[in-house]
Length: 299
Ligand SMILES: Nc1ncnc2c1ncn2[C@@H]1O[C@H](COP(=O)(O)OP(=O)(O)OP(=O)(O)O)[C@@H](O)[C@H]1O
Image (cartoon, rainbow, N blue to C red; front, top):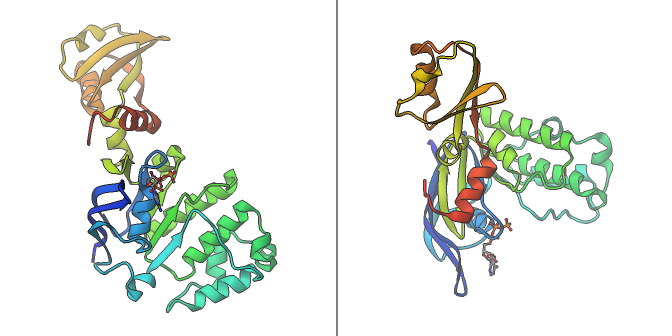
């Protein structure tokens, strides 16, 4: 079965406030999907409904074509939520052993350690005594303990230092290559841009964009092909409909376009003598700002 998540016309209202409005998407096996949006956009509410922690006011969520509460779904699910609560009094190793017992085919402790970078000294420490960043690592270890097919992470890297963060994302990419499906939220847009194959962007409870980071950036930010030229024959570029502007800056020629492939083809077919060619796209931040503040364009 390829479809792991199906969110169909899901809404959630708290009293008269709509936190999520008719959200629909499906996610296939092996995808890495970032759910993004400003504070209060509805990300955590959507994830809580996906996990069966909140009931939708209307619409339906299916995981592995089952109800999210189903025991067979729980066994395939690894979750890391924003608030890390660890059981008081247990050492990390005891906590991991306890959680691994709940699952039919858990990872070995060695595998969990290798994936998360927990140290021998972490394992001997009482979980409540760990720092915020270490707690998140334990929380990640707990999420992976049952060898889940679907991993859902709500702001997983908050409080992690740079090396923990890098290690975390390497593990995520490796798990995805093994066919695990990963869904995460983050406010660090660069992480989403670097790691996610797909971004679902929420604003005010609605999905306002759903696509690859490149697609989202390409539609909302300016793209340029820039190059050096010694031949001075850039006149040949004027009048092509694929080019929206041409200007020079710091000895480079900048060609603005919606289709960088077509401009590259033109550079060669028109024999411009371009070298040192670069393609420049806007940042995800730019697209995010445009979508969430102006909310003009819906992809
Ligand atoms: N239990 C609740 N009762 C009432 N309103 C709620 C409840 N949970 C969330 N909301 C409201 O629903 C909206 C969406 O909240 P949600 O936590 O899903 O946003 P978010 O995108 O996860 O935000 P953040 O980035 O700040 O975590 C917010 O306006 C929030 O105040």
